[in-house]
Amino acid sequence: MKIKFYILILFLFTIQLCFPQQKKVDSLLLALKATKIDTNRVNVLNELAEKAWGMSKYDKAIQYSKQCLVLSDKLGYKKGIAKAYNTIGLVLNLQGYYEEALQNHQKALAIKKQLGDKKSLSITYNNIGLVNFNQGNYIEAVKNHLESLKLKEEIEDKKGIASSYINIGLVYKMQNNHKDALKNYFAALKINQEIDNKKSMATCYNNIANIYSLQKKFSDAIHYYSLSLTIRKEMNDSRGIGGTYYNIGFINEQQQEYRKAIDNYLASLEICQETGDLEGIAASYNSLGKMSAEIHEISKSKQYLNKGLEISKKIGSKEDIKQSYHGLYLTDSATGDFKAAYNNYQKYIGYRDSLKNDENTKKLVQSQMQYEFDKKEAQTQADQEKKDALASEGKKKRQITLYAISAGLFLVLILSLVIFRSLQTNKKKNKIISLQKDLMEEKQTEILDSIRYAKRIQYSLLPTEKYIAKSLNRLKNDIN
Image 1 (cartoon, rainbow, N blue to C red):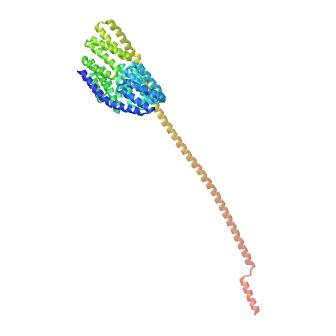
Image 2 (cartoon, helix red, strand yellow; image 1 turned 60 degrees about the vertical axis):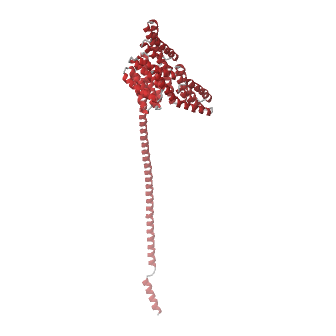
């Protein structure tokens, strides 16, 4: 009954999710008919591929992406080519074809490096890291996720930064480094809460719960799984719901509630089969095999484990292959087939050691330590450059002030010299004027003296009035 109930819920979620998505697809198909053979048509094809991928229609997604590649190549539209390769890589990764996925992402990376788009580059590095992770190549996974994180920090892409922290945390989890895994998960959760990114918050809650489950802190694990499941149901995230059922099944397993674990693993398997999640299918089969062995259903256990091993090898997932061999080793031991048990145990050990050893763990930690050191070093250098720039600016300002004061003093000096020269000139002019005045006064005195002298001579030569009167009187008398 429980399984049927889960399937019904999944069906209803899928219906709710698909209707609005299908409307968008229909609109894009109409737009495709209306567009000419140009970059707009490439963009529509890329959007159709992304929608198909989001609806788990992987064949359609590949078909649209390949059409996009042909047209983009004809138009020389590099951005369209890179995006198409990226979508193909994502689809192949989800289907478990890791080598082909990696090849497509590498092609996208080469083009994006030419275009110089940091955001797009960061996404491709992230996608390559995810493929490395699925292959069990954890050192390369961390390198690519750190490269992605560096670019995201440069462009202040908070959503992307949170995503990188989650991916790095997943690698630490696979190395059983729970402390550093939780550190990265909580760092991602804090950012997602700040920007209200609910989908990523659900992922963080789920991953935190996974660590607490491994640490046997089951009440904490259930708390965070519940937070994750609530958000995923709100968003109709069927793939996420399937993952949460799987994780709750793992807690049931840890608590030795094997029947409950089987119910949750079966619910997860149904969802993974609906969405075409091969890795999820492999993990579900492996877990179902282990639980069936615990309740002594050995035949069913081997059937599940062999299916899990087949799919794990098909997709090249070392972690799932390791789990398959471990389960087969336990079932063979339980049935007394010690030769098969020994062979499976040897294979299990081989995959376990290839995934986890001291050298890899050391390199993994060193990678992030080096990244953090480089980050701090870059920050220190940036701070020093800022100080140097401020000091240089201050020095430049002081020099400008000094030049301004010097220029001012020079102008004052020039002005003083001009004034002094003017004063000297005026002084000379005044002296000349004074001399001229004195000379004129002297000449005037001389003239006046000459006039007076002439007047005296004149007076001395002329008879006096008294003498004239006397003479006139005498003449009168003579006449009479």
